[in-house]
Image 1 (cartoon, rainbow, N blue to C red):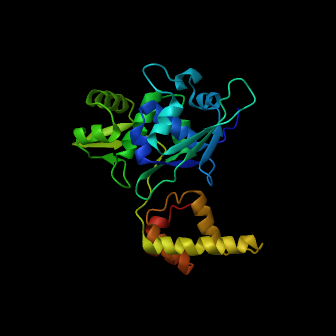
Image 2 (cartoon, rainbow, N blue to C red):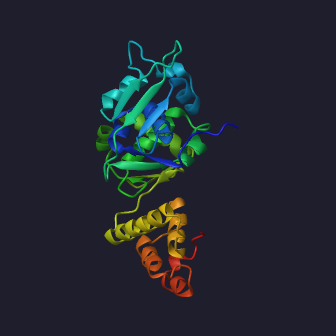
Amino acid sequence: MTKLPFKEYTVINNTLIQKLGCADVYRTYVLLLIADKSTLTTDTTIEELASFVDESKFNYKGNRKTKSFNDKLRDTGDVTIQEKNSGKKDRTWTDYIFSPVTYGNYRRISREFYDSYNDTLDLKLRGFILKLFSAAEPHSHTIILPMRKLEKLIHMGHDTINKYIDQLIELDLLDEVGDSTILKAKGLILDQPKDKYVEEVKARFEHMIAYNESRGNPISRECMIYKKCKEKLFEGIQNMHAFMKSLESGLVGTKQDIKDNEELQDIIL
């Protein structure tokens, strides 16, 4: 099996998700999974992208009724596209350069979403899930917008939204509770609200780790714990504030830590 060049997760501006149609949103998510973290650039071909998405390359071409995938990306204003001469007749090598995400206006989506649904779910449904996620409440999988506002935000019609919602309910990927819609799909990562203390402690640990590793020095037990937890996206940590306090004081993993912070006992390092 060919190893795909994907990161563990990517982030997408909500406005980019909302401007594009469902199929193009998913294609863009896949592009971002293979984008360079530092330059936010994906260097690929339409053929390669189509193979990752598991569809025909001809779906990316424009016609009299619709623009090409690349033209639709350009129109968003969030992506710069530079076509390159591949040395072959197809000339499809392309640099997709994405604008940085803005605080409070992005969604984090993991590789798990691709692994779970790329081969099992209709392309437009995959993209629709991401569009709904962009409309969810902050740090939540719940959408509470009235239908008219949702239609306007994600640029979709009432009937199509309802049709896709019904399909996702049938697939157990979505629930409706009262006036709320709750996403249940895998791979939709929730960022926790910013906590000034947490961010300050994180910054100190990042500095200590970078300083010591750059000089070949061993890092402390606490730095090692922080590093391992970060690699796992702090999975299993329910209270980041309490965790950082315990980590900073050197109590993580001790009996006192477990007694004072029961929510940390399930953390596996």
